[in-house]
Amino acid sequence: KNIFKLFFGFAVSLIFLYFTFSEVNLTNIDMQLKELNPKFLFYALINCFLIIFLKSLRWGYILRATSVFKQKFLLPISCVGIAAITILPLRLGEIVRPMLISNKSKMNFSTALASIFFERLLDIIMLLVVLSIVIIFASVPDWIYKVGLGLLFSISIILLIIIFLYFNKNIMETIFLKLRNIIPDKFLSPVHNIFNNFINGLSILSNPFDILISILISIFIWFQYGLIVYLLFYFHSFDLPIIASYSVVVLTFLAISVPAAPGFLGTFQYGSFLALTWFGISNDAAAFFSLTYYLAMIGINILLGLIFLPFVNLDSNFLLKNK
Image (cartoon, rainbow, N blue to C red; front, side):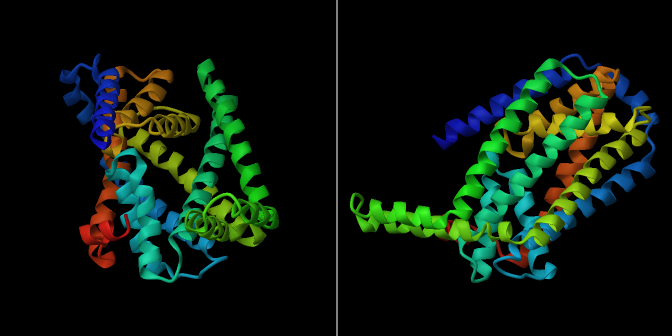
């Protein structure tokens, strides 16, 4: 089953790589290389490093309601976890950070996993905000509106459910108590414990200050996403408005949500390629940009993960023990 999923992911990646590069004239690469401005690539890479730190800082605030961790402890785990999300297929890397932090502290895995879930909710909300700005200030296809409405509906339902579950724990306890008359305790008890630990991981919902700080950091993270693309515009000598950079960010994030090969291969390139062609960039230049953007974002994730890997001792025995 897993092999089938992996092959399916590679098939999807190949399809999107074909969409990106099928009409590209590779002989024009030399001309595009001459137009590059290296100093802007350097500036973009600095901001890529900054985003990793900001993500770790935000995670610390999300966790603070249950446990306080210093950044010298969280940052290596964050770097390895983000690299794992990049490398492993089907976003399996999302569980690496909860696994690591539960292994190296007293925090329960389900509690740590809830913090990642809340982090993803923040990112989806920010994606919706940026998408709304793009729709207002840029000309986008109709299907983008539909995707935005679908995301808004989905995230609203999820938020309502999470808020209801967190602030109505007594109701859930009553339900579990009644289920004990139907389901054997040896089956129900583990589920009950996982649920309680997960809800405990959402304790940030009772801390408005930590929520505010997490939101402000999220805003800065997404501002940096757009800034990186804008700096890469200058690297490629593109004359595009700032709204074009956020269009690239939004469409790339939407594209990488499609299951694909490890490293978001194909979907990442096609997302940025499609957005740039909306703004009149040629297929050759847009495809070349998609490679630069990919290597900057994905490359930094993997590089930092490899640098910090020895500090977290993530090996095969650890993964098997926590499987």
